[in-house]
Image (tube, rainbow, N blue to C red; front, side):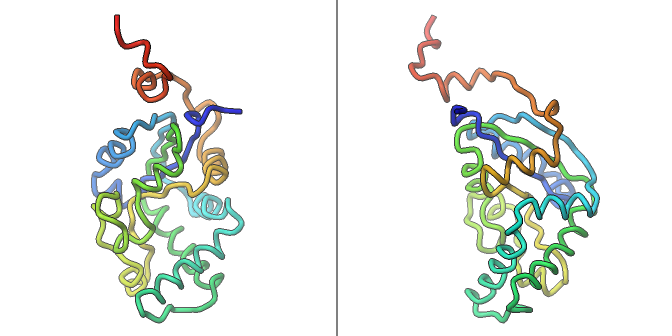
Length: 201
């Protein structure tokens, strides 16, 4: 069994993050907590790639639709549809348009609890309801209501894997095995060395 420090997760800095020149700032947010960057590339994805990406989890369509409908109800608003699959088809169409509109930065992060830590730092899917201190809470003012009014996808800067299984599938989709690097950082000693016995000379 792998040590927990080997856990990996997948992040995309979306076209709006690139266009707003936030690449360095967003990488810094993940890096400073102690995660190790082990994969990095800049690409312009095709719509086909985006559809494959969002449907690596066969339950994504149902869950995405339900989440959107629930968010409307919580705000006392009427959703455009009550059918989760219909809602998610519209979401997917808009995501394909949005995510293929320009360059994105694909990242693989490694470290203990990588998936959960990255989700915490990133914040909730909807920027309006994301906590201050998270990436989406600090850098974006978008909402489901605004994006639906404008007939577009929510601009929330970043995609982050939801589970370890999802991360493995997404990493395999975006990176070849040889593009994931294995190396040691000096900070690994501080984060993971059991006795900290390598500090004093």
